[in-house]
Image (tube, rainbow, N blue to C red; front, side, top):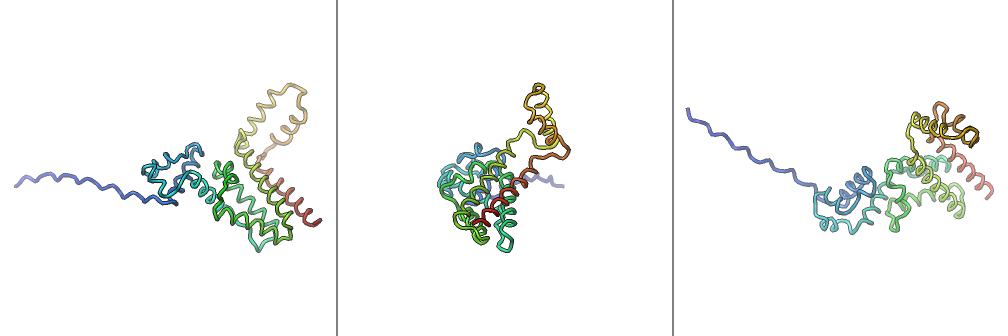
Length: 229
């Protein structure tokens, strides 16, 4: 019997690398920002994640500003447009809730979305749709401008607070509130102590519940302003 020669293992070919495109660069940039914030998003880091030299990346996106513009446009793409078949209050409420959810998914977006000087088509479409919803509901241009400003300011401000609270669950809220109460001298800050004991420490407390209450106040106020106008 002839001795069989051991067959040498053939080197496996590496799977072909996905081509770098603007859309793929935005995919990776979003993932980096979602994981570590904008501090982790540099053109060099982005090029490394894409498996290319930094200079090659500039063939697809001119600079970091273009990346941020594209990322913001993608966040707005996740936000529900106001529906024309709904009453303006219902349509705006749904849009604000959707915007809040998108901002919570992408924590980095809060400080970025309104700072871009070259908004993308989706961003512009979002703003135009909200204004169109208000105008169709009877708002004048002036009142629509006021409404847009106060609605977006409310959502951005609420999410900023929500994302920076020192607690995320009811149990954590109780622990933080309890520690604060213990540190307050007897008789000091009576109204704060009252609110903490009668509201924050009650079963079922969640800061998130305040969002709908505040939105109700704003929508009711806008409805009164619309009626007066």
